[in-house]
Amino acid sequence: MDHPGASGKANHTDQGRGRESLEPAGRLHYAWVVLAMGTLVVFGALGLARFGYSMVLSAMQAGLALDNTQAGLLATANLAGYLLLSLIGGALASRFGPRMVIAAGLGIAGLGMFFTGLAGGFLSAAVWRALTGMGSGASNVPVMGLLSSWFGARRRGLAAGIAVSGSALALIFLGPVVPGILSQHGEAGWRVSWFLFGGLTLILALAGLLLLRNRPSEMGLRPLGEERGDPQSSTRQDTPGATRPPQADGKLSWGSVYRSPRVWHLGMVYTAFGFSYIIYMTFFVKFLTVEAGYTGPEAGDLFMVMGWCSLFCGLLWGAVSDRIGRRRALMIVYLIQTTSFGLFGLGHGSHALALSAVLFGFTAWSIPAIMAAACGDVLGPRLAPAALGFITLFFGIGQAVAPGIAGAMADATGSFSSAFLLAAAAALLGFVGSWRIRPTTNRHGS
Image 1: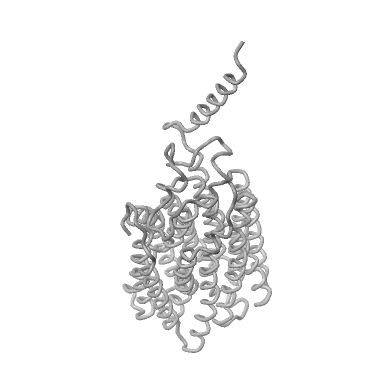
Image 2: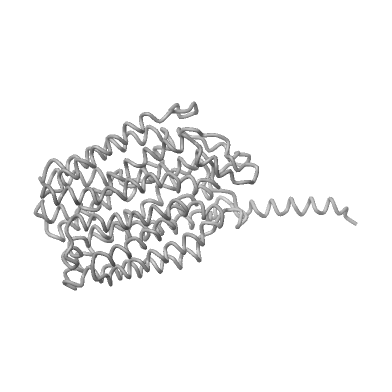
């Protein structure tokens, strides 16, 4: 008769071997399924919910008789809702699991977009845009943090870079589709567009509920790219404060998120991106059609080109940040975006505008990818959603205040040029802030 202790030990060993057998080299790791679904979450939560507004803005303004200030305030309402839920969405995901929070957030965003299509005036549109933003924040922030659980430190930046390409897919989709809808449906075209965006996002909410998993251990897996014996504290890159994760003892140390000066610094740097890029994206098509002489389809084509250029930018810059460090990557990206926004502000020539779109496209979603990876580096995978949610508060404040300011500047001056120059100045401040990030001693140097 076998000794019970020996039997238990053997069973434990067999379970361990069985767990490893789920990760053979020739089998698809489920992390790739999570990443694919995460990319589609970004497609709906940001690509359709936020950037779809840029494509329908002119038609929606005409249909609801809005001035540029009101148009900017609608974007502000959306981004204020995003800000509200992004802060607590990451914390909710850390406590209750990302899967349910992400699915619920997408569902709310989808309903918000659908009802935006039914809006009869500025106030009702603002309410539904705010609800859409709340759903976006509740889904986008947790899905980016979720990747820190499924991917080891050596692939975390790469994974985040792939996920943010969901926004690029949306630009590619929106560029040709929305002008066609507007042409076919006339004055009701912007409403039909919102119905389409909302319906697609509701479908994605259901898919997320079915396919996402909270952590690899639920399926007997280790994070993809994590070597045997790698401590979670090995997630150290060129990110300020890369220290041993505070949840190593199994308890979540929330104070380590909100008390970390390095996390606060990342948040301040992130503010510059939120403020600058949202001006560019919100009024991109409006500027081209009203001031630069583009037709709707021509503006949509350039929007799509920007999307194609941005398709792999998160992947590229996430990998670059893995190699040269988060600090250096942020500095490079902010300089490129300063140039892009400045070109839109200084000239109306087609070559300058096309170059601006291409430059922004190559860096468009890189900063969120780098920041998502940085949060995992600083605080580890379980607190990464909460950390990302916290720094997204800063990002969200920048986003929320910028469109209203830009719209008011356009109404006051009769042009969006000054607003784009303001965006360029904010991006330059982002470069300065990135340069002042305190490097740590590690294999990347700085």
